[in-house]
Length: 304
Image (cartoon, rainbow, N blue to C red; front, side, top):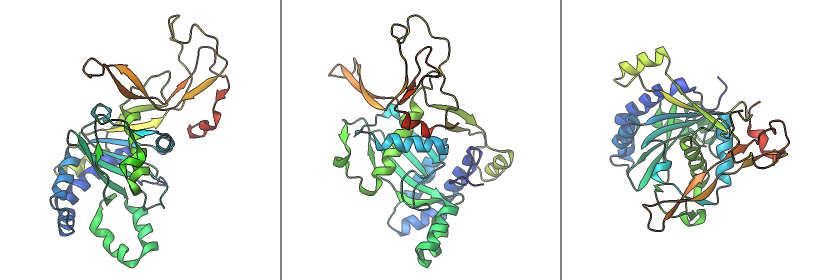
């Protein structure tokens, strides 16, 4: 297997069970000895209730590109695809050296904030340790939870707050991974529009062997994984009507619309409106399925 995470979507339920066992056992003890308090049981409980998400390499590259261009930090509770989740990217989420860069996150929402744990693939982490020091290599088994390695706590992310410039949040070393996570969560949460969306989602079940091992460990073998991937085909469907937005104009191009904040009427908000993330999406007007793409430098993120 040559993918960076060392996993497929079918492996994620078993990887989740390994993380639960580690956090409830040896890992919880290690964390407590290093001042983590009850962090082990918290991780185990979060992982046990987590929805599972696997983001393929192309979609990870797109999330990193989108995240780097986000002007502000803004995350609402409704932007979360689940209250707790375990998400694996099949490429590093940051530009750090392979093995050091996070490739997975475990999150849980407490209502007003999100607690994040950062993880990375075991083979890549061990290869990185051999280049760093013998001490790192010796300590690696203590933080290894099967296919994933616990790299520590990430930033605590506020929910339902105002749009905030990134420099005010002081995420420091975690800003790049937070940008990638924010873009990924918003992409997953947005409805998959067959005409405009850049991504598609499918449910994948664990393999028969994985289900057997999960049962033996006392876990739930019926959990499925949300597999998020870039669309193979960005052509517009032919079910548009004369009342569509594009019917009244003549276009000669296709174009990308970047992720941005948009104001919507909101009766529950004192101001009468609220902001939500919109995009990114690909606009293909009728009759322009083969027209040139404006901003074509972004096409390199699409699989062909």
